[in-house]
Length: 454
Image (cartoon, rainbow, N blue to C red; front, side, top):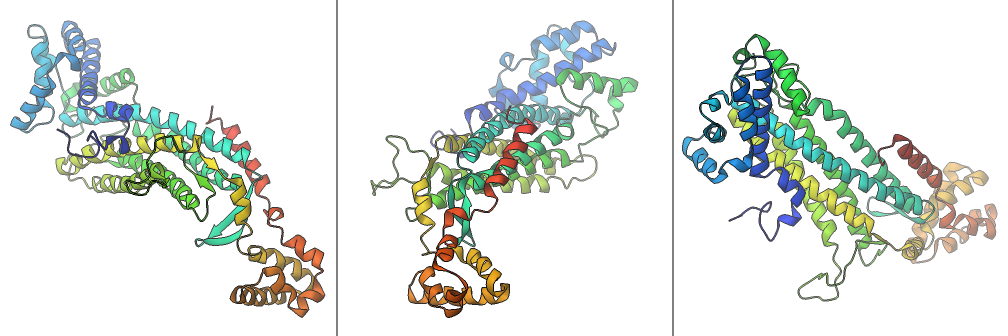
């Protein structure tokens, strides 16, 4: 009976997807072990290390459907070893004494580490697919709203006008860098291991290096330059990058939550008929999907921290450090998978309230344009003087509840320097978005040229 959020029937959809759960389930985990055992046996037979008949029988029987996982699990609990029961089960179903050649040379960590790399590589393909889909949605939003003015905010309060497309372009550029990171780490992470008990390949004999190369080629993995059983940076790097991606997704979701506040009302996550916001307040339309993304993005960071902790390995192998990865890596993959899926859903159906974006630009009564007025005024009276004049007008207007325009024209020096027409032109927020549209076009062009959305 499931008791954790990753497997609970009621909550597991918030912490992982069925697609990712299938990759890190018991069946696929054991199958990846057997995939290595089969590849090893076949290549050992090619090199004349074991009989060809034994290799063929091992490869034919190395299917998780042929063994009893419950029985294997019971034996693991009994003998306190994570792999031997699975090897015994495979040996048992091989004909005659051909099963004697199962696991001919490797150590347990050779099998488990290579198996988890194979699982991670499967998950990696899903991540890249979903990141590409998110990129397409961000590209669409960026292009559609590149000229749509909205309030830019700093330190949680209104600052200057931007465009919504500019905000989306920042998210798009960030995701592009994450895709680049994911591609760059592939040759470092998707590396198998076949080195024996302490990394010397002694158990594989003089053909150990060639055997390693042949087995990894068969499995579709790169070959390690040296034993990485005590060097866990490969998998630690991978989960660290997953946490970086999760940080971006959490940031995007949190921004949508803030802009969905009733008082702001500029964005809203997709709403479907029948979605309930509250058990007691029927009117509520909570950003529940975005809230979940934010929650999971915070938790995945601790998986990255746990992977960093697992890097402190004693001697040539260390089970106490290694076992932390068994928890941290699968959970990180499940969490990123659900965040990507939910972010794709949110962005595809995101409601953009351009009318409220325009209305919020006037919320401060013109004070949003203080920078622009200062620069217009500086041409007449000098930068420092202009700053002082605008500052005085701003503080006076805010304190007494008058508009920025009125506060400025109550100042004699401002009236003498600027005409009413000049001031009103400077106070139009829709014409002070700087180079935002040009910057957006440049980002779109870069993304298109990179080809990662194809």
